[in-house]
Image (cartoon, rainbow, N blue to C red):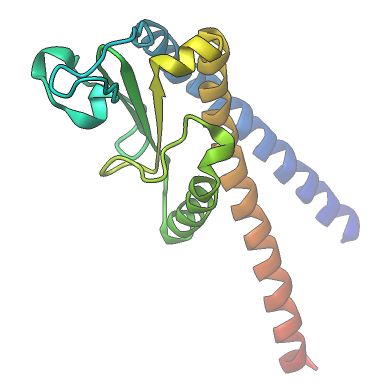
Length: 192
């Protein structure tokens, strides 16, 4: 019976790995589309305020002049998992809605993104508050592109998207494993 249990556990792990590989292949076109959109949107330049002298604010945040804003682009993998790229002449705001299939994933996602946003100074381009309807947002200005490589910024955002999904999946698996152990220990008292 132990042999059978270990075989089914091995098959279950292999199935999970196959599922992860399938998810990776379906996730690649979405990431490729986000990458090419970011590459096109990150053509930014220094543009001082037209209203206040000696001020240089991100136009995507201020929204002072309509002619300085580009049309927002939404890239959706599913209804719950999407990316919004809002561009302007001197800044780009990139917002992500992370997939949240049920209440547990919703709680894990909220806690994890809140943890990251509280430490937004270390990420430099991360906003403290996401755009409405999204899980997490980044704000890239022309000064960021003057200090950092554009390709490396795009790579960071794409890697961040991949890693945050992996982290939430890993947290969910760990939570389920812990709940299973607690339930077994709890039910041992009734069986004895």
